[in-house]
Image 1 (cartoon, one colour):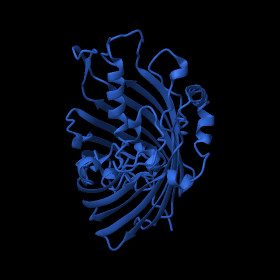
Image 2 (image 1 turned 45 degrees about the vertical axis):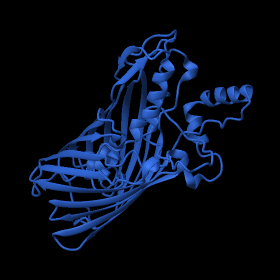
Image 3 (image 1 turned 60 degrees about the vertical axis):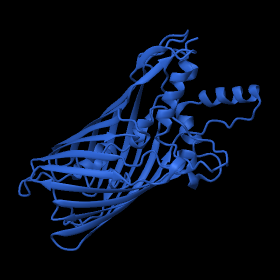
Image 4 (image 1 turned 135 degrees about the vertical axis):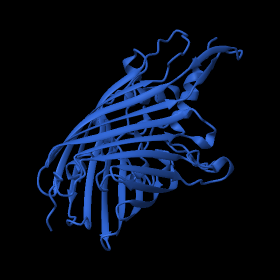
Length: 393
């Protein structure tokens, strides 16, 4: 008997290990909130990666489309391009799992901008076997998401952004058939983002942001419409404060709060009929009702994930970053510290971030030793002809 269940189990482990680094001694049952295409929740940017995945209200850069494209009209440059490579789950010995990210913006005028980004997630190679362990070939699951956005200033301090995203997830590539026809899953989603700044002309002051991302259709991998899963719709709000000491030194502190807009699947009761009915009802929810039902139940504060970080800048050329990411147990229990550095010379910037190892033995975080490397290009950077007017205080 061909064992597609092995493929599905391995693919599930690879995907959910992005979020599951639970303490092995924790015996309290937890009802996880799981979604399809969780790669959309991985930070694809080395700068934000060095600050605990902070990015909703930080200063604009080429990768703002990944976090809050409403920031883009406040960019100091007319064009920005960012490229990032992230090897993923290195601490599990997986050398062929990685995330590639590319993003950019183009300012149409001082008040309007276009953004675009793409994420490509390779889950490596999977070996298929039958019941006796004989090889049935290999699979190469891959996923990607591409989006295009538009943002506009509504005032000197406030801006709005919109984005449309296409998602393609081919987890069953190369899978042998056993009566079920698998296909690549596709979905369409949108983002809405807001940005508000109280910063002075020199950058000192508060900035605020809010985003609702991945509001879209369910995704399925067969022709059975009842077997579709939710994508990771998410609500984020953030604030950042920049202190400018002099023309050479400044530091930014920021905090983002994230809430997954996906309800938890019903907890198993042990009764087959009851559990089957509950699961059918769960899958049968409309997408819009699922967003609102994600707020039902007690202890909503425990479902909020936190990104906290800081960035020190010297002459806007040398950057030192640190951050912490906290995720509740029911969301995946990711908890880690990050550090990062950046170097900017003329129009080219280099960013590196590192996820500090944590835990020991079976409790070791599988995300430990994650290293991100990014390139950023800022074009039309001329302080005398910049198309972005200074914000008055």
